[in-house]
Amino acid sequence: MKFALCNETYQGWSFEATCEHISKVGYQGVEVAPFTLCDDPSVMTFSEARDHGRVAREAGLDVVGLHWLLVKPEGMHLTTPDDVVRKKTVAFGQHLARICSAMGGSVMVWGSPNQRSLEPTWNVDDSVQRAADVFREISSVCAEEGVRLALEPLARKETNFMTTAAETVRVIEQVDHPACKLHLDVKAMSDEEASIPAIIEASKAHTIHFHANDPNLKGPGKGDVDFAPIVKALVGTGYDDYVSVEVFDYEPDPETIAIESFAYLQSVFGPATV
Image (cartoon, rainbow, N blue to C red; front, side):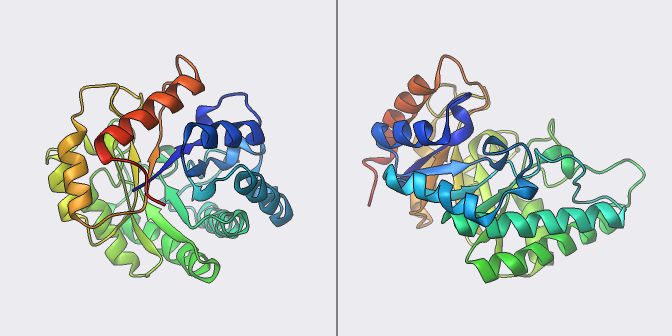
């Protein structure tokens, strides 16, 4: 297994300093939130993206890909009946696919709960179709760029759309594009009725990326989640790609989070693989 850390953990740090520390701890990859690199990722140039990729590689890291895609700029939405907003969302998603590729990344994790939730008056089937159409158009550019779009189920307190892995897989099947796959997150799976190992097993045909964290918003091993059966299930499916640490509580500091999370991942997965 390979280990990565999400760069927004380093609040207030430069990207260069962030990559240097992530590499120093022992991680092999960095996963990037575009809004941390500039205030408006929609105007980020491919030259700038290539420069960010070079910074990561010079620090000894792979750019795993992008996540937190729709934080900035405002005005994006996946399921809205508003054609103009959906077209804007498609164009931005396609731009991010090209940015991801220019950085050297290969995965885009689509979470963005606020930009996908359904309004009470929206027909669910129509909303699913709109989402599938958006994902299909973005996936076509992802495929051209050597990037895969990884749809992320999120907890019910965060959104009312794609709240389970099974629901998300149904959307993926409706998208019906080889570049559209599944991302699993421990915090999110903890909200489901099924056990996390059962979700992992049921989703193995679609899963291409994985986040390690805890429902308490901290890193892996810092809460009540038992990772031993999770690791057994994930390894049992044949998954051998990146496991990225994503936290939402940045206390006490990024250095401690990075070091303790890496040590825990090694304790449950074994040493990172090349």
